[in-house]
Image (cartoon, rainbow, N blue to C red; front, side):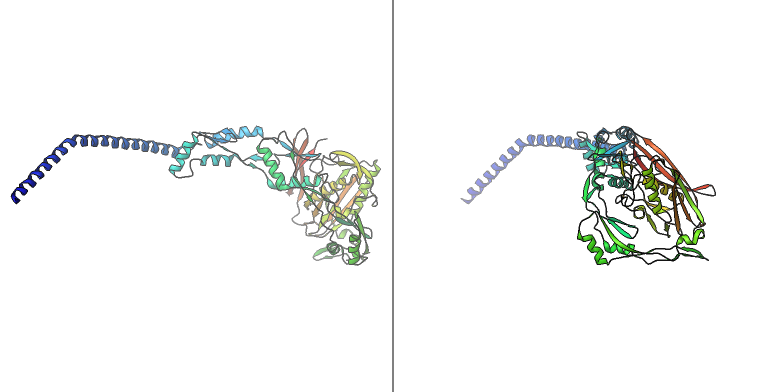
Length: 515
């Protein structure tokens, strides 16, 4: 029985073996065909990847060695694709040159004035824009760069160049405009008139918002609207500084000082009037706070020195440092009166080394009580009669004498129009409480101002003592351009020693309205 079972198991095993052999024999062609297809597919993939790698390598090499701007890049809407940096700059500069006006007009209400873009060095920063354009497709790794270059073939990017300018000059220009606004803030001030301290109240007004106006100017130039649309001046309301009696008292109060000088070393010590309030400080504060007024008067004690500077004569101020004269129409009595009043206030003023002269503080407010008359003045571009008209001729005459003495100008503003008595950039205007003319005695010795108004000639002389480092001063002023509405000019101070030019300094760049 067991033998029969063994034989049966052998027969079954053999049958299974034969069946597997047949099945194996039947699938062998299919397996071979599948292997062949897979091999071809693998080969194609390898070939495709190889082609892509070759293209990628060529594309990468081209982009790496291409120094021109890639495709799809615009600057100020000008297509600079494929251009070199120099070609792009040439094309942009030629295009933008015609778009940049010679001047812009800024306005506030009915007030308008112009600003020369050339004087402010206004331009489009095409160099930076081109540098930005050249960076596109070159700042990342090779994969990022190639991807950006590919994407730019189906789109574009526009770069806006920045508007650049001389911020210091343009800010100074806007600060000058701020004082010319018809509704400008007026600061409180004071001056001594006889035996009284006269304090004038300030008035709320507007000042130019410098940062906002600069931004408006940049935007207007950038979008090309500046050539045909006035730019609105951004302003902000400003309150005048409060009257500070304590500070005024500290500045005004002093003991009398006799004048004297020493010979070895030579030093001049000028006289000074003693000044003190005739009332207590508390009473003075009460006068200011009792009621709101345009003008307050505080009585003073003026104590004269025993020896004045004028008493020590020419020995104290032996040398004439400078002189300057202007002509006026003596037939205009009101205007002549104003010139004489202003000149008399200044005449004999002595400035110690380092001391600053303020025209408004020395001359004071131009009022009827002070004797000033109605005479022609400029008001918002028009000639009208105004109290104290003409005194700016005294300011301008003094300004030129100060420049010729090589003293330091610390505050000066030009007129709206070129005046008749000096040429452009040789003038200086003043408005009490708003615009002052100031200069500093930057010499080693005191100086004395001598002024006269007579026979149609207003003259200033500045006396002092010559120094080893003194130079001869020449003023060069000239127009730099004209438009239909404005005149532009510059002035320079040329310093000579032994006939040779040793320095040339810019005094001012000015803009005037045309009559």
